[in-house]
Every structure is written in C-alpha cells, then in structure tokens.
Image (tube, rainbow, N blue to C red; front, side, top):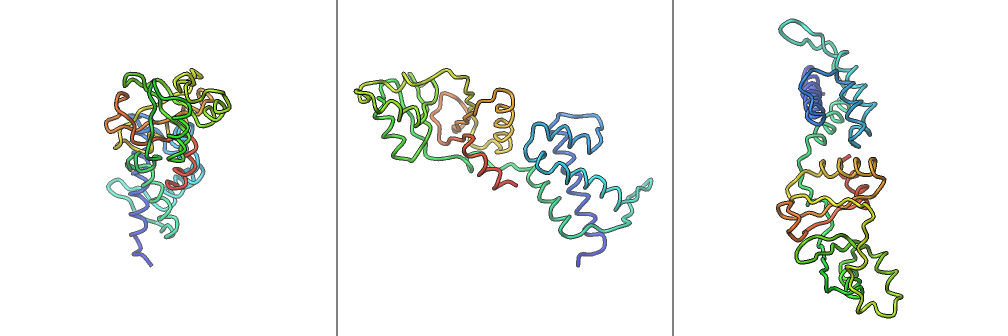
Length: 232
C-alpha cells in the first residue's frame, strides 16, 4: 500500500500535467476551469474525447481528496492505485513526444513523370504498399493508390501510360512532417481534416519536413487505429 499522501501527490502532479497540456493544446493563457478545458479539447483531440468523461470525474475527485488552505493543500482522502495509474497514463499520452516516424509505414517507394502504371504497380507490390507519391522534377505532384493502379492494369498498355496521369485533384490533403515531429500532431491533423473536409488525408514524413525531400515514411487513416491503440 502506498504511503498515505503518495497517491495524492502523484494524482495532483498528473492532474496539473494534464491541465498544462490542455491549455497548450487550446492556446489558453487565462484561467479556464478544468472541465471546460476538457470539453473544448475533446472537440479536436481524439485522445481527450476518448477520456472526456473520466477526466471530468477526475476534476470532481480532485476536489474530493484535497482541502485547500491559504498556504498548502491538505489531503482528506487518498485515490486508489488504479485511479492514480490511469490519470498518469493519460498525462503521459498528452505529453507524448514520440516521433511520428516511429508509427509510419516504411519503406516508401516514389514515382516520377516517366514511371509507367505497370512500374508503379511493381513498386507498390514489392513493399506491399497502398500509396505511391508521385514527383515531377523533384516537386511533389500527388499520390496514386493501388486501387487506382489496379483499375488501369486492365488497359491494353499499362506499360506505356505514365502513372502521373492517374494523379487526381480530388481535394485529398497531404501534409509533410519532419521525422522527429510529434505523433500527437499527426493524430490532430487526421481528426481535423476528416472533420472539416470529409476526405482521408495522407502524411508524408521526410527528414526535415520539407516537401522537396523524398519521403522516408507514410501515414494514412489506415494507420490511425493502430496508432490510437498504441497510444491509448
């Protein structure tokens, strides 16, 4: 059994960490009640949304275990070990700074303006991939999917049709991220894009995040469930 105040201290530290994360997420500088922060952040952050009711309960629990005095906080109750472990887990997730590349699909094959549909198929098939970034003179043009390629393979001349012809301007958003950027930023981008446009976005990861660099990893909504399972 933990020392009488150990769980209380751990709970308050995790609670304060979550409060800081929510304020940073929402760019809030003025005081906003904790439950209000949770409610606002849940609109755009899947992790907060998944834990929204639990976090609101923890706000009530905080008031139940702590008696505020002018100079200190007196613990009048002790949270259970399971509660402390869970709030610390949520705090760790919201402070997550794991690199986005750790969750990306690798390797990435790319096509250029001379790559044919048949060659594009072989590139993706070789890595069991689904999305093929296409470049013209080292400038990103768009992404072609395996489904698009499969539709063209029935054509009489897939070995001569440039795969760049398959790039469609369908409104799909592509974000370039540096390999050391946070996975939480990627999750937020997925959530906002799907909510705002209804389209499934794609994230291409390069060493520095520069769109002129060839990608070393790729993330799509297909990876989102795997990412969330690892984080939550």
